[in-house]
Length: 640
Image 1 (cartoon, rainbow, N blue to C red):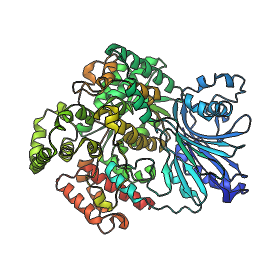
Image 2 (image 1 turned 60 degrees about the vertical axis):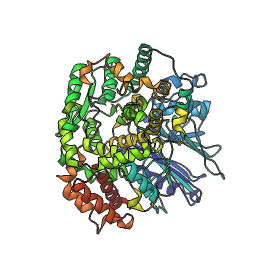
Image 3 (image 1 turned 45 degrees about the horizontal axis):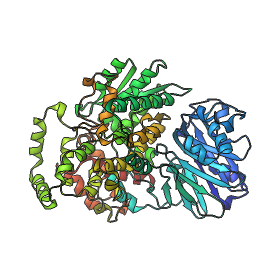
Image 4 (image 1 turned 180 degrees about the vertical axis):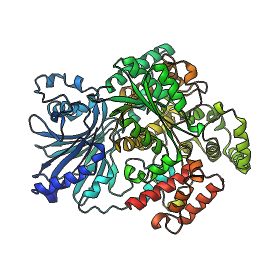
């Protein structure tokens, strides 16, 4: 795992020292991503530089150093990620006579690019990656991102220069860096808590899309194409569904996951796993133990607020599986200690409050291992979110009710005071009560009167009317208008939205920044693209059945754990942010949201103050919305 950066700039042709100096500075800005080594390579005749910071995982010797030049000296690569099937690619007939200098995956894919071509190599690669590949003969630069968007890659185009980097902070080292904020991205941020690709917080800077390859050739405009896409995988899966019994589906999925976990355990450094005690991470951990590669280390995090604490469940699972387990309990003080560093870690506004426990568990894990496997992706590919159960059950029937009647229901629900809903909450047994009950109830009131097409966006919304803060419209992202029709169900359409938006732009970027901030590599076996394609070929009954989410994954886990260890309502990986913002973080938040200084003229400070006061008074403004305000202001003070 590494951080990569570089650029091509015709104005710097022939200036080798300047190229290498800027490249070195860009790499240094990413030192946290790769503390083991730094490399810079320049082609002064083209005005190009490639640089990287290395976190050595496979082949710790100098033979794995980057940027790396191919044996024929035509190709140069700067590569962030891991290719889990590199050994298999190395057996391709075209590589039979390769004179290997080491055993790194970087060398394997570089020689494959050189001898087999870019398209053939990408088709075979199984892993997570962001790649800059330079063809010295044709003077073509290829920028490539992995299929699911696990690894980030930003691209800057301005004034005849094209630059790229794993994180935005590397661009601050460039000459003529004068970023301008994209206000439509700010509005989108207040809806989603993140900025969806291909957009970024800045104009003229975009994120490479998952599965995208960008080709930059001399005297031509950059050309973009998708070598793989979730949309294509979903539509192909719906066209050719698997005709399998329950038992066959369970066996096939179990075998696929076992192979993915085994491949992702390849490492020359210590490896462990995040273990929340939930279904996804428990299944991954069970397969690590099953692989029989020696003792497995697991790590979990909890909270003093039991509504958010899964650590006790993780401990039970760890003992059953026989892992060496380490736990950390998060307090409000831990949050206070982290919040000031969040803008530095995330570079652009980011407001998924689980960024705090994700950073803390990464920090804890890095004290013991260098690589950790996670359960990320299970909810998206196998129907694990409450919204999936909602779409497959209640909404199927409720959406047939005329909109005016539903609007009247929403009006009546809104008229009920929160104290009555709190009383209802207390009447529900704790083991059956959803976490963040009141916040989810407010969301339910918000979505009742809408059509299916708008339902998904509202379910993801942190702020119900984000343009009131910015006075600017937002980017048009989300589920395509025809997704439900093409895929045959709202459940499938929601899963598509989750896998193309929520997963890469929120979940995966949260994990990447938090883990890389402490030089930890995190690998998600459930996002092996073969598993994703397999899941899209499964009929929906294998995902949500009789109100039970992730039906197939639960049946697999039952092979390794007693059902009572994981049969409970979904909790998610979150913290009691609303309680903290009304309690120990109240003074900190009041300072950031002070109308006199808030927003720097970019936002409507009066609207923000109204939202904050309504939240403190308990008037149906979610803690997530206030967290978004705070994260934007923290970011603005740091970077804008």
